[in-house]
Length: 65
Image (cartoon, rainbow, N blue to C red; front, side, top):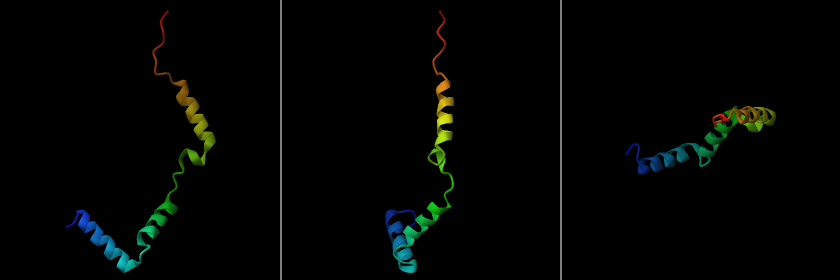
């Protein structure tokens, strides 16, 4: 039954019985707290600089007159 939907439901029921109904909420919370990537939302100025650099790189060939 390992790897099937029925097995997953059975494992979820076991985990909730052993560790409480908030088991998955708690492990999700831990993962969220451990996150440290932040990305551009954490540094809008860096996003502006990166966007400007990307905008300067043209994907079109130079037109020869």
